[in-house]
Image (tube, rainbow, N blue to C red):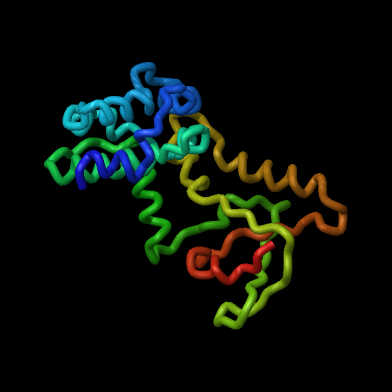
Length: 207
């Protein structure tokens, strides 16, 4: 894949240099030298080879906040991923943001590895079976109105332990805050995502 193809596929050529991406980027808040728009600008204006060798190429967390705010809909996360792929093919071996730990967490979640997915729940937070539409070996459980997917949040207390971030409290308080606004008869019901969410996703009824 050449650089012009990457620019075209990710709409990088439409960058307006408005700076909204840098303003919302969590990395730019702690590293004043980092700017998504400057990386795009360098590639668009012929400095792609230098970007491939720049450690900043591997700093992006691909959180997609920049793409969400971009008025031109530049897909910066995809831009970074494709530039990294190009760098890898040319022998560059950079260090991913957080030393690749977030990518490793995603791999762990995708593998058939026993995981305690509900260990973060406390006594006042209850779980139930998901209501699945259509026939299947999972069967049909009791129905509920809420499906709450915490993703890799349970891993964050360990990953960011040195920052004293209580990531799981975010999930617990979100559930408690939601149900505090529900009718009394609804309290106590909490429906976590099924471990097989990737397989069952297409079978959930559309709201």
